[in-house]
Length: 119
Figure 1: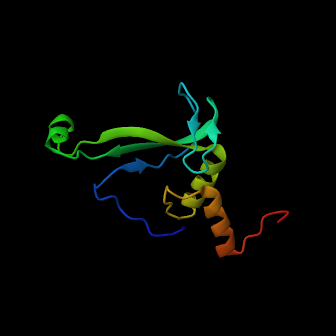
Figure 2: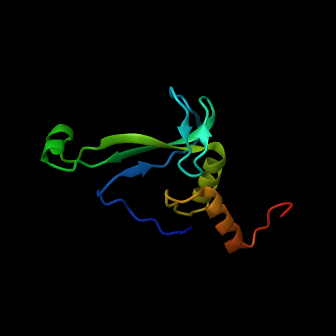
Figure 3: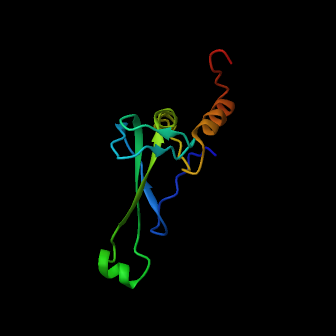
């Protein structure tokens, strides 16, 4: 669901960092798009969402520090979904990363009355 209200991360659970631009997928294996589920080929343009979480217990506190950030595996978005993500965030929408970008684009078109060519 599109919203203009962003919730600040309060240190509970995992969080992710929004990328500013595309990069080439430079991993040893293809990755699955977080939004649409398609496979992203190596060297294809995509967005990488770096993720982290806070320590969960005293042991992790000692290892990572009280304000430590424990890195998690990145999430990836294909070029098509990434384009929608960057455009919607650029005009001020906050994106719930559990959303499908194509669904959000359809919602945006319905809210604004925007008509796609040929549609």
